Length: 126
View 1 (cartoon, helix red, strand yellow):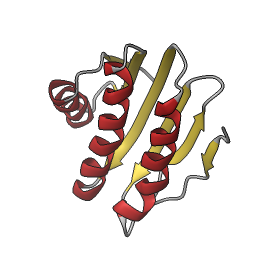
View 2 (cartoon, rainbow, N blue to C red):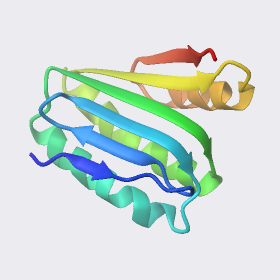
View 3 (cartoon, one colour):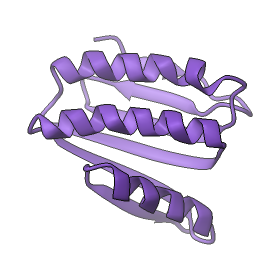
View 4 (spheres, one colour):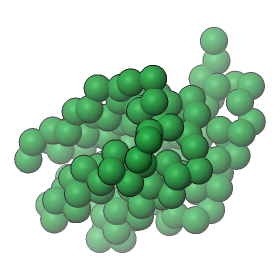
């Protein structure tokens, strides 16, 4: 399965999904003009990956900021991961946040309360 690599911009996060390693990374700012259009390839890629996932999948989310429309799309991504988790595969979501960024920590906790996948809150200390 081909890796999914999307270069980050000031408005969109960088994306690195590597099926052979079972590692997915979303990093940066997420305020795209059209969130649904931006996140569709991620959701499609995860649908393909879900057909034959590795025993363990690790997801690293390190967002500085995301807007409301992105939050819905991120939830869609997490729902695909939840389906993989429900099929008896290990999925861990590492939610990175800056040490003084309460909003980003709360956002991670909100997702954790909705999605039945283990979350690990990882504080970034400068």
